[in-house]
Image 1 (cartoon, rainbow, N blue to C red):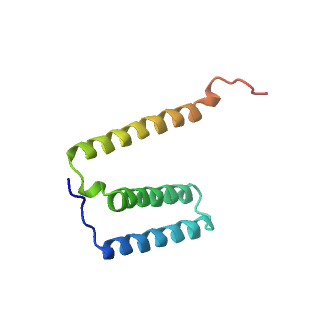
Image 2: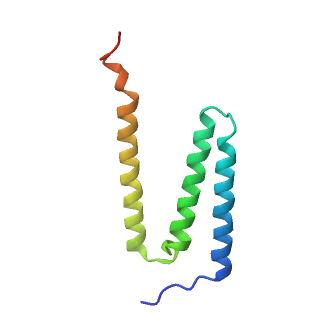
Length: 99
């Protein structure tokens, strides 16, 4: 199976975009936006992960099976994050350790 041919311009544009998003994430960390700072940082991390997977890992040019595996990984990640957040949010409900 021939590997996809991605132009050097696409790689360079993706690299510059990743650098800009990293710089933006770093600069936003110095702002006090409350919970919005973390939300923006996670959003930029998500955009960077999508760029890396789609361009550098050639997921954009692969077949349906690879896309199904990626979708399964995303669903599994969301399950793990939701269970972790459920544990974190409900820790104080039972009142252990309250004084």
